[in-house]
Structures are given as C-alpha cells and as structure tokens.
Length: 375
Length: 182
Image (cartoon, rainbow over all chains, first blue to last red; front, side, top):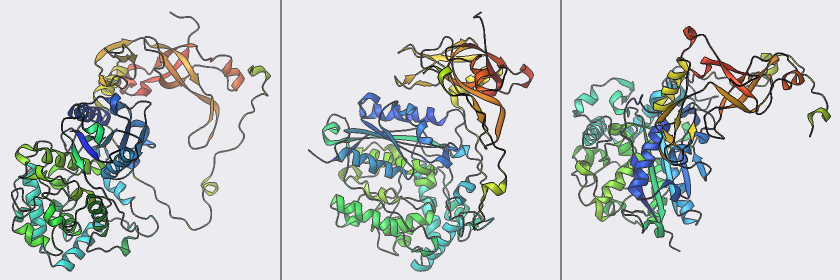
C-alpha cells in the first residue's frame, strides 16, 4: 500500500473584515461544497473529518459539537483539533497513512468579527499567575520578539516595512484577499507604534472566512482530477515559558521545517523550493520564518526582501497569496487558506497571483512552520 | 419500572453557596474574563428569529429528503443541499422528553422547578426537536408535576406580549400543556 497523500480539493469563501450575512455554519457549508466539487467527490465519499477550532474564538464550549453539519458529517467520524489548521492537515495525513481513511476533509473557519474584545482572548493565552501584565495589549510579546530579532540580525526596520508593502500588493491579485493595497514603505513606517518597534500596519488585520481541504490516499487521489502531493509535514511547539524563548530566532519553525524536509527528502531547501507561504501574522515574522526554514541564510532575509527577491517575480516568491498581512488574519483558518493558495500555485491555477515554475516542484513545506507563532 | 414502585423523590436540601465556600484559602490567581461575542445569526436563523418576533414559528423543508425542520437551517445536513422552502408552522407540538430541575446553573436551589423539554413542533419531521421550557404547570414536587406533564403530551406556545418581543427564542415564554387539540 502506498503511503502518499495528496490534497485533492480546496474550497474557501472570500476573506472579509465583516461577514454579517452568513453564519459560520453557512460559510463552512459554502467552503465544503466548493472543496468537494473541486475534488469531484460527495460528502458521502469522505471517510473522516477534521475540524480546527477553539472555544474562546467561537464563544461556545465543546465547540466541536457544532462542526459536523456544515461538512456533511452528521453521525460520521469527526474530531476537532484546537490548534493551527496545519495540525488538522497533519492529522488528516496520519489518518490516511495509517489506513484508517482514504478521503479526509479538513475544515477551519474564523468569525473574528464576532469577538468583541479579541485582545481579552489573546491575553488569556498568557499564564494567569505571572505573565498577564495588567493593562498592556498582548501584542507586547511580538514587540519584544521583533526587538530581539532586529538586534540579533541587524535587519533595518525598512525591511520589515517592505514585507508589508509586498504582501499588501500581492493581495491585490488574489480575489479572496481582504486587504490588497498599494502602500509605500513610508506609509508603513509612518503608522502608529503599537508596541514599538512593532507598528500598526505591521500587524495582520483580522478577517472572517471558512476553508475546507480534501486530502486523499494515493489510490483515491488517482480518481480525482487535480491531486497535489504532500511530500512532508512537520510541527513543533515553542516553550510555554515566554521568558525562556530564543526570542531572536523562531526555533519552533526551524524544528518543524527540519521534520518536514526530512520526510520529503529535501537536503537543500533554498535550492529545491520554488515558492513559499510562511506565517506573517506580524511582518517581521516573515523574515524570521524564512531564516528558520533555511530558505534564506540567517541575517540575509532583510537584504533579500529589500532587493525584491521575495516578490512574486523574484528568486523566491514568498506569500504570493498576500499572506496574513494582505489576505487578513483568520486564526486557525489562516494556514488552510495559505495551503489552498499553494495548491492553486502548484496546479497553475493561481491566475494573476501565479508564480512561474511553481508547478514543476510541489512545496507544502514552507507552510509547515506556521504553528505556535501567534505569541 | 412503574414509577409508583420507586422510592418517593425527596426535595434537594441546601442553601446558595457563598464566595467563601467557593474559594479555598490557599494562594490562587483570580481572573474575570471579559469574553464578549455578537454572533452573526446567518441567513436561516435570522429569518427564524424575525418570525418569532412576529409571533410565528418558521421551518424549512428539504426538497430532496422531504424533512421539515425547525429551527430552520440554510442547508440539509443529511443531504448536504441548500434548504430554502420556507413553511410557517403551528405553535403547537408534542413533548419528546423533559426534566424537572431544582438547581440553577450557579447552584442555587429552586423551590419552583424549571422544566426544560424537547418539543416536536407539529408539522415537522420525526426526531426534529426544539429545546424550550414547559410552563403553566401548578405544583412544585416531582409527583405534582409528573401528574400534569408527560412524554407525548400536546403543548402550545405561550408568547410574550407583542410589544416586548425582541426576535429571540425567549419571545416564546414556554410551552403549556393543552388538554384537547384544537
């Protein structure tokens, strides 16, 4: 039996700052309908379902109870991952490679506009006894991390601003992105300090959305029109002790990508990978993650970004979807939107966002470093 | 088992818990979360809630499997197809199951119990229930209430006065037993 796994279907609704017309279930139904149609399957063909959501983001407890209907998964095997969307993809890969399922649907959605005090939810991610500094926005964690990153690498703040400029512009070519815009680095640098050095425009703005992917075993994938093979997956968590983290470097992303590269048999990621979708929840994270993923030599990311090397037409296109800065940040659904974007790149279906030569080498692995970088 | 053979129900004893009873004296960290949400009801539930505000219970019918359900949904979760044939339902139904509850969610004893129930609205398909309260029942003890409320019993919605309705499930105050079907 083959142990190859492919993404065979992707469906999403456009990301938007507000989505008052539809409930999250109605958005999920739309995304699932698109994904199943894309894969040429029905809900009855799916063997197992993975939903990715967290109670505090939903405002309901035991929120996994509410995920089956919109996937066509009533009274079927469903489980929920309270983590990153990519962990849902990893769970699906394992379900398939262990022979439990041939077709698995992975769903994530986000109704961030329904959370009236999101920073309160973020604050609750910090240890209640010794890390919740009263009265400070939890973005302070990112401000400290950015400071240390700039300190260790000598990267100029212009390079961080350039990430925003690039991703917002990329988003203009992506019809599901919410925040496409033409900005100059000065526009970014002139935006207000939130937790200096972190500026307002360097923080991904939130967006609502829903996305569903269908994954398949090799046998099942052969029956679908457009399989995109997953060659490697990896994940890692950073220390829960904030003060003991390696603030300048994204160690978790480094470990996660090493795991994925090993599985994929990739020895020289900077030469073998044609494009990457990496986490840019905060603009400096894109630089940090490119280094952690060994796509750019350490401390070179700033120079390469400033020279345009990570633009859509550059040597290594990064976040040609627009990233979170351009598409909008949608919690656990973020990584699945990016996976869907990567699938379209590899199929050559990305339209104006298409990266040249993407189709010749599949890459899911740049994606795998997204976990655990929210804080 | 015949309920008449079971030992009699005894009322719950106790009093509302105080703060001191909740908290131990060891060092602890207190945090009052400010979790506030405003959920988009969506296409189907919005129309349902508007209907309640006007004193009507709406459902939807699946053109494929023929089920009629309320609360309505935008898609049939069994057939995975859009569900958009709207029907106005009667305000009567049948009790599928119920419980007689003597404790509030924050552990205060109730002398007059609450009776949550699954109500199957007339005109809907089997196993399509509606969670609400049974009311308009006299008495406090289990035995007194069991004499008036039974599984399979017909009930009718008792509404808030029109001026006080707000397009919420609570626009129906409760479902009261009806002796004879209209």
